[in-house]
Image 1 (tube, rainbow, N blue to C red):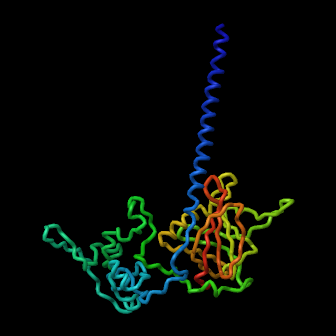
Image 2: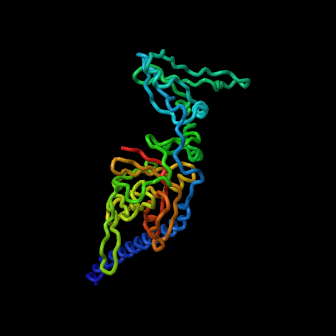
Image 3: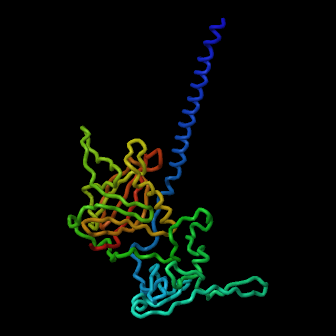
Length: 348
């Protein structure tokens, strides 16, 4: 009898272990399907369209006005170019100074930094005059800093979309309603694009707003016996080779992984689903395609979600780009399509 009782312990332990493993598996499966249902229920949030015009912002009339430091030797060291009109610059707290060309041509006097002087209000609470702009610190290499109250009270630079949750505010810059023109690009209409076959193949794609910077390669066609299919991009952005080249008339299709946990083919388009919210917040999103020494700039105009069975490649009458990734996470049965139109070019 003693021998029989001793043999029951391994069976009992094994049974309990099996039950625990089974419960864990059921919990994991339940979480997976629950997350899938939740993610699928929010796919409509990935549909967005911009309301404003599709074009590069106009160049500012006073593009040489800058923030900067006047050094002890009288030279001027620019810190940040202001890409807004004078009115917006002053209203945002800026201090107008001489253009760079004048400041470097002749020595300018050192501007002493000033500390704002509090004034007493009728209630006895100190206030600060609105017309005081300078702040009380200097650049590390000497001289005085020409800046504004933004340095002391940076909250004015926080994007309105973060005002409800300031502790979780992002670092994207708020430009007081002014859309800044990407550096070095010349205005180009989507209807003024190159003819088909005149452009070069894309070699690189960048989307600064969401941190995309990847090489581009044409996708090969794989023979599956009874059918053919395009290969999946491996840690790069893949282009459909029959689609338009950068800057050409037509729709140019680019595919990338949201994530690839099993095959390990990268996650170059992991942040692509963030674009719809950016568009709704009024933040412009630009996509840059480099090709043979030139760089073509596209402005994102819309995002759309379709089921994987409904995805079809389509053409366009003007210069258009479409980026594609699988959504939602862990399910991947839909595709997000991010569409943009040609707005600028930077010659090599």
